[in-house]
Amino acid sequence: MTRPTRARRLRAAAAALTLAAGALAATVPTAQAVPGARCATPEVAGGWYGENRERLQRLIDRYARCAPYRAARAKPVAVFDWDNTVVKNDVGDATMYWMLRNGKIRRPDTGDWASTSRYLTPAAASALADACDALARPGAPLPTGTPSGTACADEVTAVYGTAATRAGAPAFTGWDHRTVEPAYAWLAQLTQGRSAAEVRAFAAAARAENLAAPVDATQRVGSATVTGWVRYYDQQKDLIDVLRKAGFDVWITSASPQPVVEVWAKGVGVAADHVIGIRNTTAPDGRFTTHLKGCGSVPDGADTMITYIDGKRCWINQEVFHVRGAAAQKIGPAARRQVFAAGDSDTDVSFLSDATALRLVLNRNKDELMCRAYDNGDGAWIVNPMFIEPKKRRIAPYPCATTGYVDHDGTPGPVRRADGSVVPDQTDSVFPPAAVSP
Image (cartoon, rainbow, N blue to C red; front, side, top):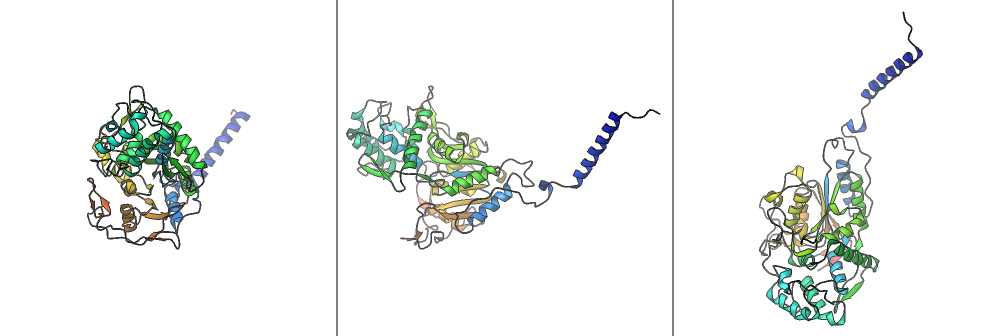
C-alpha cells in the first residue's frame, strides 16, 4: 500500500478545514439575512423641529443600503428642491443680480425683446426696448452695471422680480400656471448667446459673493436695493450627506437655470448629472438659445414645461426614472417614484406628493403646500420651520377650501385630495416659539 506523501497529507487537511469552515458559516447567518436586523446606518445630526429628526432617521434606517431586503433592489431615490429648501434665498436671483451688475446680459440677437419669451407682453417688450436698446447693438452686452445703464437694469429687474414693468403693466401673459413660471424661465432665456461654461462662471462668481456677504446683506442693482446673500442650510447639507452615505440616489430639482444649480449643488456633493434645472436648447455652436427643452409630450422649443409644479413631476419622471412621452407627465407607479422629497413652496407640491415614504416641507407660509402638508392624510408629511430667519406663525387659516389652489389658467380654487374631496382650511401650527405674524 502506497503511503501518502507529506504534501498530499497537507492538502487533505486543508480541504477538511475548508469544509468545516463552510459548514460553520452555513449555521451562522449574516446580519443582512436576519429579518428585522438593525443596520449600522449613518445618523442625522440635530437642529430639527419636534420629532422630525427621528422621522428622518427611521426613513434612513428603513431604506439604507444594508437593510435586509435591499440586496436585489435599486437605490431608493431622494429629491430636493433647491432655493429656500437646501439654501436660504434664491441662487437664480443671485445670478441675475450679478449679471446685471457686471453687464453680462446681452441685447437680444434679433433686436426684439419679444423674442426672449413667448409670454412677454407688448408693453414689457416696449418698456425694455425704450430702456435698453440705445445702449448696445443686437447681440452685444448691455452696460447695466454703469450709470448710463441704470434705467435698463431697473426695467429688467422689474420684469424679472415683479412680473410687471416699472410703469405697472403686466409683463407676461398666456402661460400654464402649473407647468411654467415665465419670470423664472426668462432668466434662463436671457443667457441666450452664452455657453454653459460662461453661465457656470457667472454663477460661481455670484456664489462666492453671496456666501461671503453677511446675513441680511443687500446690494445695489440699478437703482434698486435687493438681497445680497445666500447660505447653505447646515441641516440640509448633513441630511443629503447622510442619505448618500446610506445608499440613496440623491437628486436636486430647481426652477433656476441648469448651469447655475450645477455650481451650487457641488457644495452639497451632488454632481451635475443629478441636477435638474431649467434647460435651454442650444445652437449648433453649443451656445444657448432663448428656447427651452421640453419634457414628456412637450417638444424642445415649445417653452411650456419647465421644472415648475407639474413640470417638476415630468422632469423627475423623465430624468430620474427614464419615463418617456406623455407618461412622464403623470403620477407613476409607487415602485418608480422617489421615496423621499423636500421642498418649500407651491412650486414643489406635485413632486412632494409623489414621494412614497416621507415628505419634508420647510414652512414659508405657501398656501397650497401648507394645505396639503397640514392635511397630511397619509401621515407622510413633516413640516419644519426655515432654519435661518424662519417665518412667524400665520394667524389667518390657510384658505384651502376656497382659493388655496391655482389652476392651469391662473384661476384660484379649492385644494382637493386625490379622491376629489376638498381640503378644509388649515391652521398654521409649525413655527418658532413666540413667533406670530398677521
